[in-house]
Length: 119
Image (cartoon, rainbow, N blue to C red):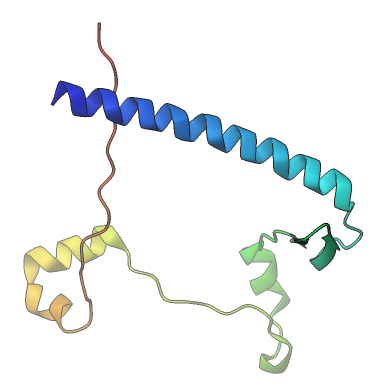
């Protein structure tokens, strides 16, 4: 297991170094392309390469302010999506798992691994 942990840490360090180099190259490409749009995609072709730069804006909603506007349905611009409340879901699973099983599909996610060197 010691060898596998060492191999994992070495691969993680190599990945980190590669990511740093990629980020530097991205910064150089952005400087070379000089995108003019604040949102959207611009494409430039040069020497056998095509570079597309997609610029985005992040938006954050002030839910209380939005609700206070009380916009009519045809002017509403926010979709409200249902989300699972994990605390309440676990409580329901303990109380009556058959209720949850009727409407929730559960599948495993990729596990995360953390390895630290200890002295």
